[in-house]
Each structure stands twice: as C-alpha cells, then as structure tokens.
Image (cartoon, rainbow, N blue to C red):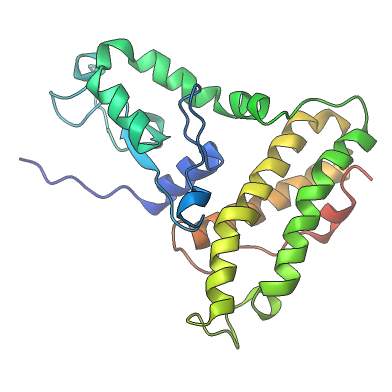
Length: 230
C-alpha cells in the first residue's frame, strides 16, 4: 500500500481562504470555527472529491490521465457532518456537483450573509466600516507590540485571548470585507484596486500564520485601506 503524503500547508491555506471559514456545501455554510467551542479551533475536514486509489466514494469518476488526489482542485473544505454525508451517499453527490459547490461558494455565502452590490461607494463603505472598526478595536486592545511576538508571552491570558479573537472575529471580518469589496469592485478606483490587492495579501499572511502555523509571511496592513470607498 502506497504511503500517502501529507497535504502541503500551502494547499490547506488555499482551502481555508477559498472557504472564508465556512462549510462549502451550499445548504450548510456552517462556520468552521464555531463559537460554541470558543472560536479558536476549527472543525474543518479536507474532503477528497475523487479518492486515492481505485476504491472509495466517486472512484469511478477518476480521470483516465495521471491524477493527483491531494491537489487543491480535488479538495473541498466541509464540516464533519457534510463530509460524512457526501461520502456515505456518493451517487447523490457526483464530482461535478461538488466542484460546482466549490466554485460558487463565495456567491452562496455572500447571499446568505446579505452581501450585495451597492449602487454607490458610500453604501459600499458603510457595509465594510463596521467590520473594519471591530478589527481595529481588538487589534488596539490585544495585539502584540507592532504586530510581532516581541515582549509578548504566548502563555499569558492576553496572548490566548488574542489568538482566539484572531480566529473567531478578525479573520472572519477580513473574509467578509473581502467579499463585500469583491462584490463591489466596480466602485473601486485604480489606486484602490492596488490597495485591495495588498490587503488580500495581508489577510493571506494572517491566515498562514494563525491557521496553518506558517510564520513570517504576513505583510503589514495597508493603511490606505482605511480610506477604501471614501
């Protein structure tokens, strides 16, 4: 039996980023960092659309050409219940359906969260400002000095609260802000599009650090984001 390789951290990061922290089954969309367990632990499971080898759910849909089961394109992030459901009844959940869930996930999530395309920049700004203000308030109160770990005891109560708030509040807010801006990108100026690209890289780095435990990659928050849609 071949030894299965562990899924690379970069792939895990892409999955969490693409899911925005929610189960990708469209009639579920449950938070993968549930508040009921503190918001700092995730329940996400990386589900294979096509399994390893010649057996398992949807194995008959395995492509004829060379195929790597652990690629991002063959994985979807689900809650444990939905993962069990799709694998227990594979005939009801073919490959094409699951891949459609994944490609349309952000649209489905935006619809559920009431994220829409606004008529003007003022309305778009109002939609993002509350999440931005909440993140700033938490950052000011709990973040390590200058956003680093210097003079910061990871065993302290403040450090533990900071780690919990990052996963349960700050990252979900960032994902929501990105969803709102993506839906209203038509209202951005050329300069704001560049700022938004920097912001997405900032969030990507935070996800790497706090979800995938990869340190040192996050770029600083672009201050021009404070004036987005202003």
